[in-house]
Length: 406
Ligand code: CTP
Image 1 (cartoon, rainbow, N blue to C red):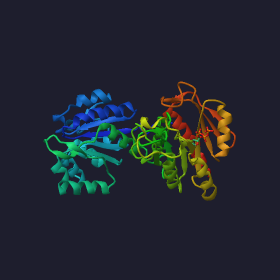
Image 2 (cartoon, rainbow, N blue to C red):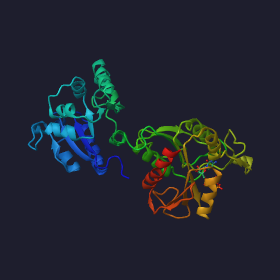
Image 3 (tube, rainbow, N blue to C red):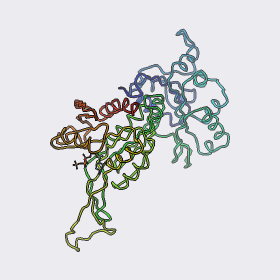
Image 4 (cartoon, rainbow, N blue to C red):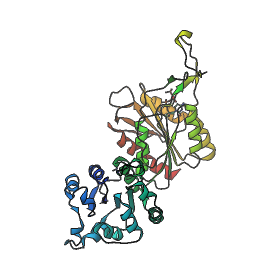
């Protein structure tokens, strides 16, 4: 299974703004994903950056107004617009926003935009006063009402020296929104997928907690893979340092109890629950609301069982049928398959993902994983060492038919 960028054609328009230099980075990142990127610069964009800048990073010709009439069978603007899977204009100036809103087509970019039948994603960049002007706001409303995806602008320092809303959002964030736009219509369209990720932390006192070494990487990769297939994703995450995939609805939690509450709220109507989080099994019985002082001596910390989230989910599923599919994870350091099988039946799972955390190249913190998938029918599939992104895609491939069946 590929990412949504693979073999997609992105038409990338660049208009006149100092933020245009950042779009070279966006074009480079997009090209590296496997997308085919055609760039059109307006005359004002060429005041800031050159076609050569973009040609150097996309490996393809970048177009300017002098290319208005091509000689490749179709006129150039029709071909560029028609062939695109997505039209991105970043940065887009107030002027180009106004032209698009009114159907004015007086340069290669606006003509291509009028000819295009694909979705439009725009990242405005302009001075604060121009952005907040009622004319610009009304024009953006027109574009939104036609389905345009408006990304940003962000707040901060503006080229005029003013501070306010008007900065183009960073290329990485635009890339995430492009990924989301290209994912629409996938195999999980309109499916609700709930993913838990990260290691919960159970307070001992005001500053200390009992936690584990889970990085959250496998859970975040699952959230991204589900988004890539067009799913609506709720990501219930214990603290991690990972960026939230664009389009995921984040529910930030810390303890097992909070995660239980968030899961129970999310699962009615959920098509799948992917329980990748490393949830605490034990928690301090009486967390102290102040910092424990050394002068008080070595504390005796007594533990109690934390709630078992998947067991609670199993009861709800038995009554309501939701979530349609439940996937658990078994991180084991010994007797991998036996322990996984026991958990599969004890927690009434449809699938369990078992991984041997004693291996250096799999499990916590690293970017790779070697897992075995066991389902409720008794099938066992041992996957080779793969990236966590690829493991996530394989897991989703396995549950698509289960979602349809349940
Ligand atoms: N899990 C859960 N609630 C807990 C602990 C774990 O829902 N309090 C989920 C995990 O998210 C995972 C699955 O149960 O999907 C298995 O977790 P694991 O820690 O491997 O198993 P435990 O049930 O904790 O059993 P054991 O301690 O015996 O390994």
